[in-house]
Length: 362
Image 1 (spheres, rainbow, N blue to C red):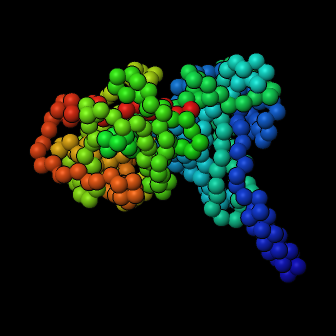
Image 2 (image 1 turned 135 degrees about the vertical axis):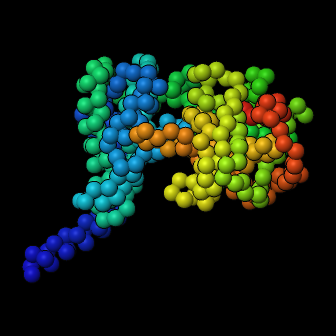
Image 3 (image 1 turned 90 degrees about the vertical axis):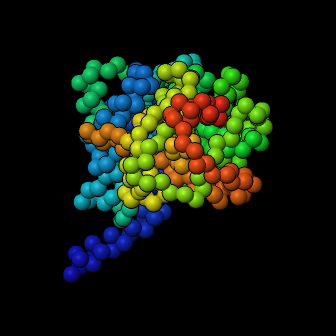
């Protein structure tokens, strides 16, 4: 009886402790070791694209489910064990540089997480440890070179991989733009690149984190930059053809506007999310925040994420534009007349090639 009571009290104490400790610690991963401080760290001497691909591959070998967010290079994972309970983590490859000489030094992985259940104090430590073990196996097998640096910081210099890219689009001639909240972020410097090459600094007007939507503002634009009509009330159907405009892979593959096409695969999103559509249209990093059109040339969704899983292809998610209704009302963006005419993909591209912009974030 004593042992049972002692165990019960211990569990209660652990629960209180985890409530106090929380889950906010961010841990740096490099090879076989988890770093909890910014003293010294071993980083991988690889390119940004390789760091991203490697992170996805390792996550797929390590965790129960994996989902990526285009343009941010975040890998969202969920995992469960009998002892540790359930947890969700975000893994982000980050570029570090030496504070002493300011030179770029390589990539490490930053893991931050939250858990559901009793053992919150083990998160993100056990997630980080599992990821680090798989990372060590991978780097040993591939013979990836490493650097050890002491006293480091994240690299956000222009031209470095601290700069992310995404897509935004014009919804009002006064300069209001729509993108994803995860593209706009918080405390970021945002630059919008127009088709003529001019760059405007954008400010964040409103965000809806729950729906991953943001409204931005730049200077009013000339008439040639046409606001895109938005479906605020109608719902699309399964099998309906759709077209995505955006900047997949950002400026790494060229800054010209690109189009992909597909269909609405489901009127429900990830895990039956009613605020999303599923589509088989091609989605890649840099597409985040971009518009997805129906055959009438009306925006019905905002590119949000894609599913990353072993052997999985053509599963992307777009936020339904009816989620924009409240935000539009708050900033006074009037609804545009409905369009009944159908257009070819070429005509949609021609109509809105001056309405969809590359966005840089630092």
